[in-house]
Length: 383
Image: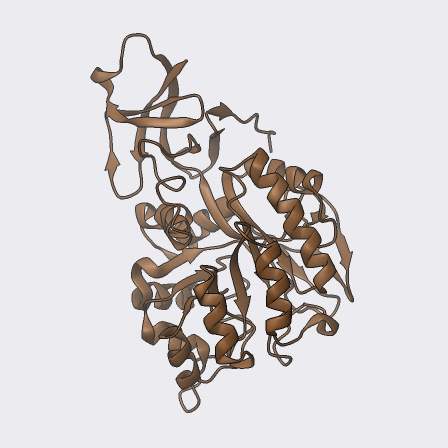
């Protein structure tokens, strides 16, 4: 059956339109047409004057529904995490695995592969965050797992991770050039993070295979005017895809505005969310630490940030209301740009013919009203 989502302002990706409708059939979008051109045999659905946009795309999801994926690496865990994030408009994401030993990483790869087969428009692949970090920038990761990448380990990971491992966060200054070249040649998006790279080192890596930056400003060398590091290089270079966590905890709104001015369409929203999304758990225990959820923060017992308690819906709301960016650009930061990082913008992140019928409807206050995934409505739990 063919449907038309009507009576709303459509943010299709690059354009904004009124008096149009999103046509979709089964799990795919047919196109965006004027309301008076909707075929007669189409079932009309009312967006009630809301804002219709693509479902959110998140490149960094650690967990949800009380589950930390690295701790419970199964397809069932991923489906529960998916259910949690659909409640906040995230219809596509990269399950993210934090620093772990090789056996656990291989388990997560197989779980993500199974989930990708079941829900290909939701599970876009896997983000491996670590374990190839600078030992002095572990963040909340288990330092016992942090190590340098070797060709022997890559032999295993690249073979096991074919078509699954899409995004890798590492400290490039801790890897041999031949290792970085091999990773870049594999097609995996290489993202600099948990790094003490100097400005000059970072600029070299940006020109030689590193095309992204993980959670700008956090767990990296910074903006020191005498000894600038990775954050400064990212802003100056301006061509690396750069994720940022807009929760009011990881960086000041000024720092987000500065990044936007410097990076333009290369800046995108990520949640880096922990297990607490859509859950009332007080903490989760994993590896060598407990992650507590207190006052909108996800933190270790001693108060260090350990991921976030953020959803992509909240990230959009914060970017508009707290940072002051325009809504249309904010929505692109949560949909189109992350899809472009993965070269999947014709599949998700836009309302275009052939893309997955993944859509959200917001009201004027940017509250979530409707979610559609693969052309199916998602029942939303009242809050």
